[in-house]
Structure formats: C-alpha cells, structure tokens
Amino acid sequence: MRILVVSDVHGRAGRLYEAIEQQPTANVVLFLGDGLRQAEDAAHRYPDRTFYMVPGNCDFGAQAIPVRQETLGGKKFYFTHGHLHEVKYTLYRIEMAAREAGADIVLFGHTHTPYEEYCDGLYLFNPGSLGYDGTYGYVDVVGGGIRTAVVKL
Image 1: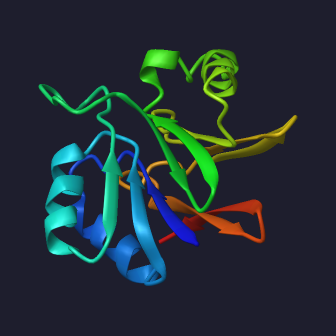
Image 2: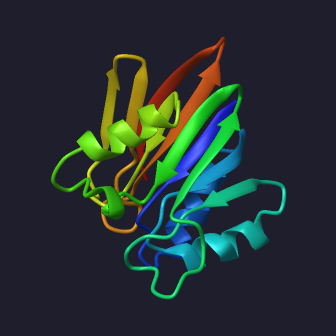
C-alpha cells in the first residue's frame, strides 16, 4: 500500500496535482497542513483517492481536527502539522504523543525540511514543503513493514 504524504503547499495547487499524478498507485493522500483549501480542492478533483487532512498554522479559520490517527495497511499513523508540538525546536513532544497513542509512524510538516528517522519502533517522517522546495513523500506499507521516501518534483 502506497500513501502519498504532502505538506506546506502554501497556495501552489499545481504542485499538489503534480505530486498526485506522479504517484498513481497511492490511493490515500495524507495532507499535513498549510494549504488546506488546495487539499480540499484536490480531494474533489481526485475522487478516486481517499484524503485525510489536518490544518496548519497558516490555514486560518480552518475547522479541521489538528491531530489525527488512522490505521492504514495495518499500521497506526499519527499525523499533524507540527506547530502545536513545536517541531521547529524539538521532536520530543511529537514523538512522545505518538508513542502514547501507540503509533507505528508519526507524520508532520511545518519545518519545510524533509526528515526521516526510525527510533525504537517508531518512524518519524516529514515530507518537507511542496510549496517552497517542491518536496513530498510517500509511505509504503508492505510485508508488515514501513518504508518512507522523500521525492523532489
């Protein structure tokens, strides 16, 4: 199962569509904030994909839930934009929240910098900024395991 992970679109809807088109086998899209309106438009444009979205600190007035948990491919995903966990300063808070939730992987954005780490049974993954640097990510859940990757448009 391939899952597309996108964050920090910041108005660049064309890049979001390009990322979706580049990953035709990704039937699930996890959007990590800052460009929620563009993600909602993409969800209408691609009705064959399942979208899960959280708002970012630049999604003013958004009513979406800021932290979500979903089980996909048998793995528990904990995802949020990251600003509420202060990920620009430390990953400790988001890591502890994900561990407390029993997550297998935690996804976040906000920093605009791609990040991949595996630490004591927990994957930490930030796809970077699609809007600024043109990066997105995907998560493959295969054979009971998880593989992450960052892609540059």
